[in-house]
Figure 1 (cartoon, rainbow, N blue to C red):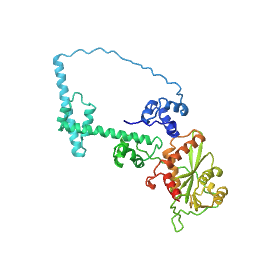
Figure 2: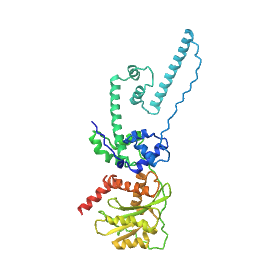
Figure 3: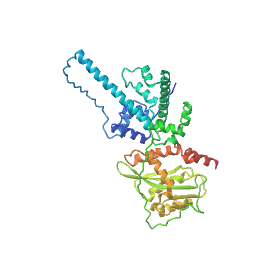
Figure 4: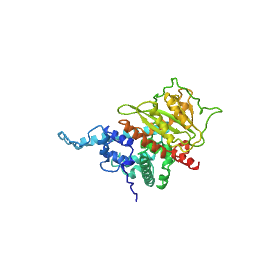
Length: 412
């Protein structure tokens, strides 16, 4: 007997709530359909989200009046027996001609184009009763297969549909918190749950299941410039560039990468400053702010320094933005003994890891536009926690950043 896991409001992120509200308000789903599709518990949970986050007035549910219209037409006169026989003869000739036509088309498709008309399509025709009055025995005789083979195939398809439905339910449960988690990472995350359910699904099979259910993630690309590198402040060499002086971290808290990205809100643009550990991929510092002032940008670095566990040499790598080169930001480096590293020019590939973390947060978690700065800060906090603790990385052998960070910090 399956036990239903009870969820609370904390299990649903703000980004997920906004996505559900947007779908309902666009008319893609009703609130009841949204509850069924995403497994949302509570009869009025979605309505509460609509009242709180929606743009429409959902305080009352308008009733829909059913209008039925009909035109009474006069009954046709009955045919004589001779007329009925002629009508049936014409229908028989047309049906035979149509059957010969479709047989010829199928023959050409099989011989000329190499397409097989398989048993799956045959089973779908019978299951959907597309041919009225056709019995299974006659249909199997027409196709040249036995009834036993047909029923064996049908039972296999029913079991496969049930397995696919369980897989999709597990995928939707994971995507409540990580709505754009890719298929390869999903396979790793779902491995214990699939093994517990006795389901074996490989990578290609999982791709096929998600493709059929329209659950594949469509990549998104966007580019916006937030760096001002033409300034009078001193620039520092790139210590992560290939060469004899290249710094390659072999543990956390040896190299941090920093970057700034934008976040659109309903009112204005806000900005997100991130500091990420280059070895564990863990976001160690972040801050959401409404201006590009250096004092605001430095809050992410200050947060990272508050959580620092070691006093080993630490390289801070960033682009040549005016905030990172400023006297205020460099003074923080001096107080904490940080070694400064910067890109040679405005080349995003020289700060690729920081750019990649920005892209993951914005393309996988921050999918809905927040209303204001406060809501954006809350969404970022939830997204960073899920990213650090739950999202596996292929470069980390499908471990989470928090697992790698804690493993090395514990052994240090």
